[in-house]
Length: 302
Image (tube, rainbow, N blue to C red; front, side, top):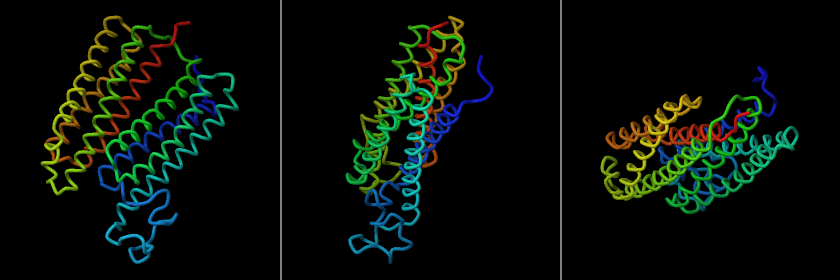
């Protein structure tokens, strides 16, 4: 039976996972607003740990034309939130050592998340150094997704000993394939966004930028429908088996539908920034829901 009162690790793990998801949302806002180079250097911002108040306060090595207060503070807040997430993950790893040192699925997963968050910070610096090159932005997103998946795994395991029944190997295998396809599709999406930014920076009108991407965009869209079909097939299969996992499969299916709907809004509404932020956030939530479904399905009945 699940206890009504959460342990200190469970509370911290939940807060850390939720904050990491919020960071992904803010990262989407940074990308959609074009604030990725709001601070043109890293780890400082215009050569200072605290952003300058005006263009007049810039060090001589920076061009005043680079200074945009809105974009600068958007990127700076994103960096501060990244530091906060790093500290939360560190605290979660310490709590795992204190409370779950004999449960390697929790301990080593949180330690791996902590190590990866340091690597993610370094990747963030490479994103700035390479001026938002599509390949490094893709790597940055994929590592962020892996980090939140690890946190989900540790959080789930912290509750698992108090949870109910489990699924079977077939369900876990099908869900794992769905996760893999979704991650590939998300990677293609980041590449599409990179090509769009290149087009916009070259003077292409916003409503014509998507048309410049070509085959990569078609692959991204096709994989989105593959994910939708996979989620629908998995849901129907679980319904036929009267599985206890059906509710989570409906969550996955609903998120896959919403993801495609927002993608359509972006395509036909001149890449509406709000839709871009929602599109990325839904992608991370979809992967999270798939991961929870996989974790639930791989547990063995006791």
